[in-house]
Image 1 (cartoon, rainbow, N blue to C red):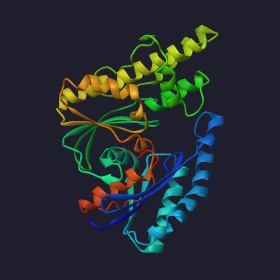
Image 2: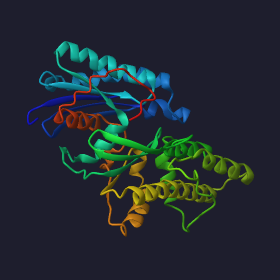
Image 3: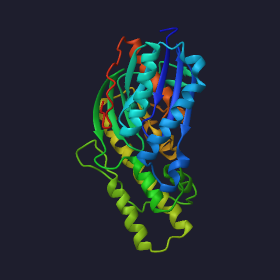
Image 4: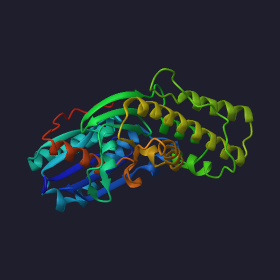
Length: 332
């Protein structure tokens, strides 16, 4: 594995990304964001995303052509994600694989998010201590996993409706905040001068599942009844919504930790960059003596480096993931 070089592609949603590794080193990780294409719609438009991927992926590959000729394997995210976007990634990866005559690996995008926790700077490090609990929290997914080893997972719970990140974006849209909405909600919430608890913490009884649709509805009804929102109202709504959402994630993670006694808890995905979430989890788990892991913020959102790390671990275990069928609803 010392000199193995991997080319990885990520096109599951609205970031086009390519990464190249050599051994345990990330040589490059290029990410093209499509925010400017989707901001006027306050959300990702699948058709626009697919078109942007098809235009930009060639440009990114061209930038890395001097490294590509030396790679030993190609990996790409085969799901979950937007079907059209996934297809662009597979076609590009399959074309390169056939041209270079090297193996092609299909990687689970969510497993990639977890793998991002083992990226320190540009280096792939052995960070995980098993068993661990993983909380995958992003725009499209909110899941709790029991991780027994690399590639050995048991899903403990998932969202029954909206994902946490999706709820953040929808609340931002209700408040007329700029896109992307999740980070804007956090920015507004930081301005709150007092602790606010307007909304109840969503809970699915007797389960490790999540539900955020009702919380979003609480916000919608509160805004409706206010009729005219002041800037101060928006700040209070953001702070209270964020608190309720994070407390729901925290509550289920604590229950899972108490039951399964993990050595670590890995929190990953786009929402894991949220500062309020990190502080809440740190406060809760400092007394339990369980280490918390997060990806570095540059690796929280979708990127190809995390796909490369996941592929590296599989090659390290002599597990060549040769299933390249795209699956927009792919599970672990």
